[in-house]
Image 1: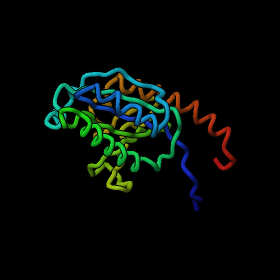
Image 2: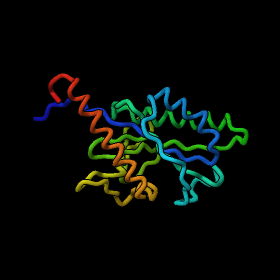
Image 3: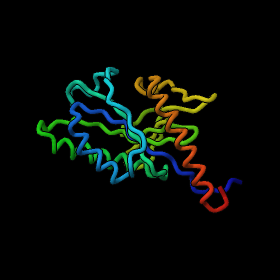
Image 4: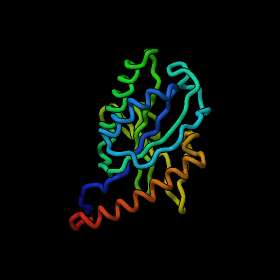
Length: 186
């Protein structure tokens, strides 16, 4: 019989879509306050993959990823997604246009998985509480991150895969230090 034990910590990140980059200057410090210092951040890149957000957010929409220094509990993903939804609503209320100008998609990474949070149910998503679902987006297999049939197009891009390879390397180093400091049983 298996014995339940606490999970190993994970590295949190956030996928950001914005139609007005100026709001990022207001959202970024709030993310840092909640998740800790930003460890790795991509440049803003065009987001040509879908027009799904155009009506709500306007155009052009740009994408970036940020990851956070501290490791965290993977069980906190539902609460984090709920909070980022509230942060999006705050940003919308603060923006002069009154429209949604930022989309925040938190997730976490460990050695084998890149997991995203979503409010939308689907056959490949698992309910994790608070109206939130978890989706395995990338799977580490044969020495590389492997997209799955449902993986979003921007998560399949070589630059995104390279970003997550770097995060995995950073996670490995942090995990090693964490294992050295924790009591036996892991």
